[in-house]
Image 1 (tube, one colour):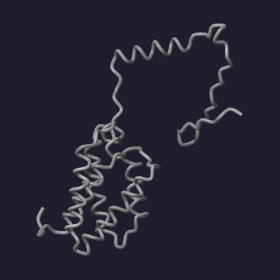
Image 2 (image 1 turned 180 degrees about the vertical axis):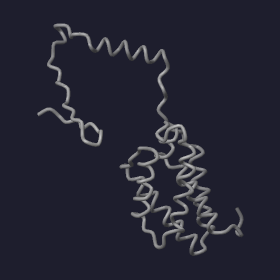
Image 3 (image 1 turned 90 degrees about the vertical axis):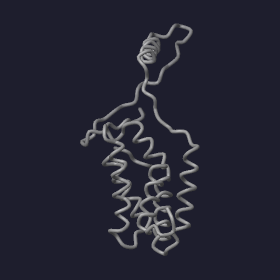
Image 4 (image 1 turned 90 degrees about the horizontal axis):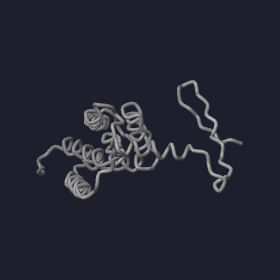
Length: 176
């Protein structure tokens, strides 16, 4: 992109880079949290988050954080509590402000820096177990279920109580 690129296009690219390099969204897409159309949902999310800035005036990071949080919950069944969403929202607000003030070169440098850092980063995903691994896990589970020998006779903690909530969630409580 050269200096003649409109600020809106630069900001939309910034949103794309920020969200596509955000580990939370990468993990959600890579591991199918969004279902079969997870990648399309991520692309859609990039678009609607960028438009959100232009459709609402004077956004503050907490508003952006709330908006993205709702999108993640609804589309990927994911909640973020590692603090990265607040940082992401702050970065977006800062870049939007810079684009609005005409400091697009600084935003482009930040985008390039983020893209460069991400290119060397390993992707994080949870691999699906192969058939062989599944049978090993079943064997281990069966071995664990066997009664302990007299030399292993130690008191095992009883399982935690579970309760079904009205909304379908199960609450696991520690036994008193």
